[in-house]
Length: 175
Image (cartoon, rainbow, N blue to C red; front, side):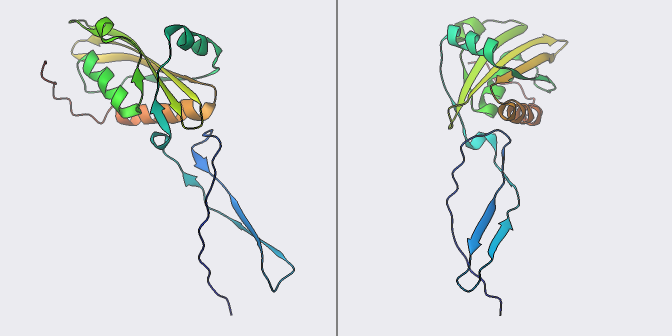
């Protein structure tokens, strides 16, 4: 008769390359000479579970920007009509830190460029450049993501594409 066994296992993940975990359980039973292999279904891991805001100097940011080969360019598509509100929404949606000083972002301006930075729990760097302008009550532009690995660049791009459209377009009151 076939029996059921339940067990728990800890999985150590060493990279975020694809945002997916694949695996196989291999075991020998006490009454068999055969080894049994069980292929697991893929498990999706959300990038927001392993990316944290971080800081670095402008020089380090520029050096990494030049070095990292994976780039994902996302066109802005949003109902948000203020460039600063849009930047804040992207910062909150991606769990990144804005490295561009607030003083450089202030004022009543129709364009904005800002650098964002985060690190994964595995020590992988994620760089983002937001470059937008307000054209006829609509924010337009591009968000460029750079990383050493394709997985982080693609995962962050997917997250931004999803989240940039999901904010209420009601203007935020001035402080």
